[in-house]
Length: 101
Image (cartoon, rainbow, N blue to C red; front, side, top):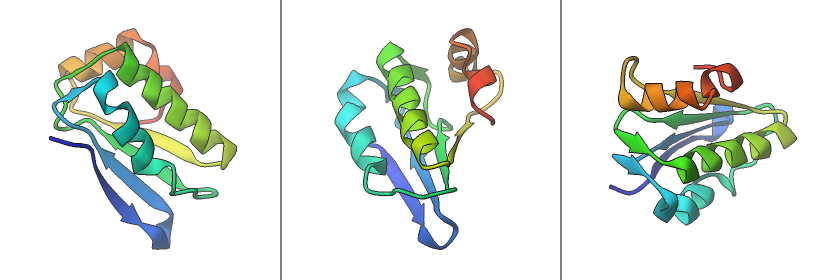
């Protein structure tokens, strides 16, 4: 599965739906999913509902999205199933303190 996106221009919201495994090989697709959607005071949602694994490159890509959004005074929200492997990885990396869910 590739990275998918749902764009809502009216509310300045972009949802990025990640594949089963979010790895370094998705770097360009992930960047392309948001780079042309510059929303001041907007919302970027990263949806991990279909994701069972991410590596350190995946974590880095999320941080790059946060840097991008911060420059636009926008927010990044992470959506993931509680008690999932992804939830554990994000918690170990401290993302639960950086990103609202």
